[in-house]
Amino acid sequence: MTTKLHAVARQVGGIIVGKELQIRLALTCLLAGGHLLVEDVPGVGKTTLAHALAISLGLRFNRVQFTSDLLPADVNGISIFERERNGFVFHPGPIFTQVLLADEINRATPKTQSGLLEAMEERQVSADGVTRALPSPFFVIATQNPAHQIGTFPLPESQLDRFLMCLSLGYPDAAAERALLMGEDRRELLKTLPAAMTADELLQAQQGLRQIHASAALIDYVQALAAASRQNGMFAEGLSPRAAIALLQAARAWAALEGRDHVLPEDVQAVLVPVCAHRLRPLKSAHGVALASRDLVLQLQASVAV
Image 1: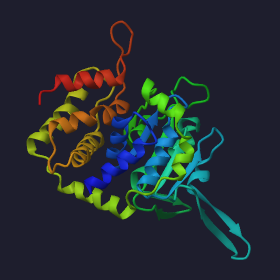
Image 2: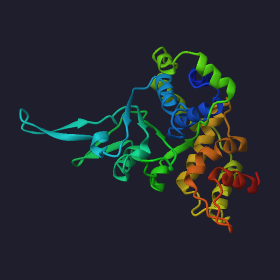
Image 3: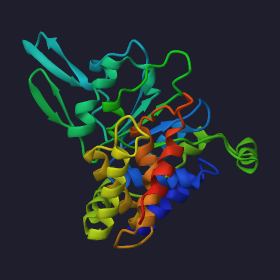
């Protein structure tokens, strides 16, 4: 199964050039069963990454362009009265798929954003007193623009906490950008991608994570990181128990991609920033300047002994 996962990474790497680490982290997130948030400026390949992952993993996906006038019912579905049936009939929304690509999620209002909370946490949608299960596997891959850009609404902490990882692609280096300029259009390449895995194989790989051993000492390390985030005074709030569970699950997935049946501290460190940085809000220093969460998470890692 590891071989197929590596094949997915190579295939996506042929579309998103020069971003091997980000692709590996994104695949780790989906293998761990989590939702993925990709934050960056427009035009660096966020949406293309989501498309390439869904196609390569053999998953059905729908794309929703989030805008300020989008309503929760536009995503989750709505009941419409049908005269021939003399009653209301529920019409499922685009969320009833295996991968929901929530494009520019922070351009929607908080009301619409909160409409995703139940689906992301419980893998179900409740409407008109009826709870409907979502397909399995189910992922939300969301993209968002930087908060300082016009027309954005910041994601609340409760929404951010539902995302297992948050990644930033960044600008490509000179060699990768030249390959993009001289190569085929990325959208045309997406149309030719085959599925490197099936949904059943992905589910099997996810279930296999339970066999990845995490020793008592390794769990002590995860607990120490969570405790330090709550006590060191660098953050407004520390890591929640859900965040600690997410960190351990992501570390298991990273170890699986490395072909190991046990988790090492290096696996925890490899996923620490993408799992924790978006969950931690820094306190301002004495000079009134807030350091970036990523830098503070690295300081947190350095302060906790393995």
